[in-house]
Length: 107
Length: 158
Image 1 (cartoon, each protein chain N blue to C red):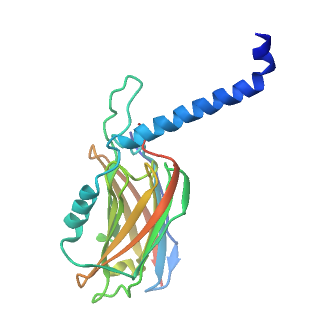
Image 2: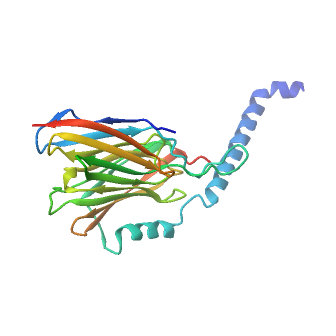
Image 3: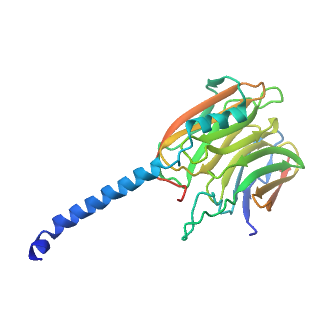
């Protein structure tokens, strides 16, 4: 299942400005707690890791547990230090990685 | 039969009431099964992440609704008061839901480049319970905020 992700990053920022990043990825986040119609437990399948890289350097990361809602939304902040690429990686229990990226111009 | 028809409204009411009571009993039974992480589990989870450092109040703010009608998506925000410089920043934020089948919600790893220690997300909650947010600072200090949230419909399937 190729998940799709949306990210909102300001296109431009002043050097040193703290910017808000908003992200949302499509994922069922199957908790492992639910049972199917036959009463069999549905195996856990969640995104357990989120990483944000700024020009290759990891600036923010997060570990997720089954208590995270489906289609996880996350907002956080980073400091705009230089122009370049901000990348986002979501890794699920099967090791599948969903990626997104945004360009930022810092003046 | 005619009696029944005449008293229909009242009888329906009584029946509905009875069903409601049954449903409540069912809910109570659900609560009784080990859906709630034992307090000890939760403490162990906290210890594992923050070690034995003393946990203080202050610096950290947890924003939650007081009542969540739908336990499937409960918005929460955590804000930590920190300058976020190389010398003094928030290393990690952990969020625990003590009344969920497993207490961990999420852990966030921050860096001085985060600029501001603030995150917002959405979580699932099984039932009315306490939520705890814990911040680990770069100097090793640990701060905690706690808030109770009432959950109308639990969000853990089942």
